[in-house]
Image 1: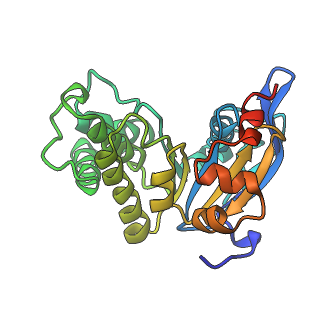
Image 2: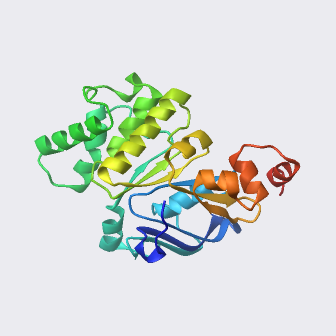
Length: 264
């Protein structure tokens, strides 16, 4: 992928420091995401992947730094200004977070009920179209418990798309899925990115999925609480100047990686 200037980015994370209590998990990190890109956040356990995601979607306030979405800082925004920024994003949580007492149609139309004044038939139509986009046409009346894990992830993506956001944040979309189902979800992400021009920010630990879908990645370093590398995952795997980055992306266990894993 060709590089673009950071001023053209749809998301910019600037000098973000965040953690819990007095202990930062990430310390003064910066990166950017361009429009239409599939951007994946990678890192070992405890590296701060989920913390960064929570800051980016506005549910966790960092100690310092900015998260600019379309040039607007979600960290400092309040009231109607904050609501306008949040309207530009959709979120799929790791477990899907579907309401078990609602049908798929009811789950997907819920954001429309909360944030629009559309008539019920229009909400039903939009929810039906979103389910069709993710390959769940005909499943509108099914309950989440009647679906496979992959179908639940698809339904959660449909709900995240209900308000037509520009950016979708996905938290571990491959988690708990078998390889074939995971590949199907990966293909859905690629189709949405290519056909609708959507921007994706994905937290993942699945390297096979990352190589399939990611335009660029950022790799977090648990030891330094910073960024070890940013770029194309395959380029970093094969040509990074950092031995640790190459080992991480090749899933190689080495004395150095063991040392990092057990560092306090």
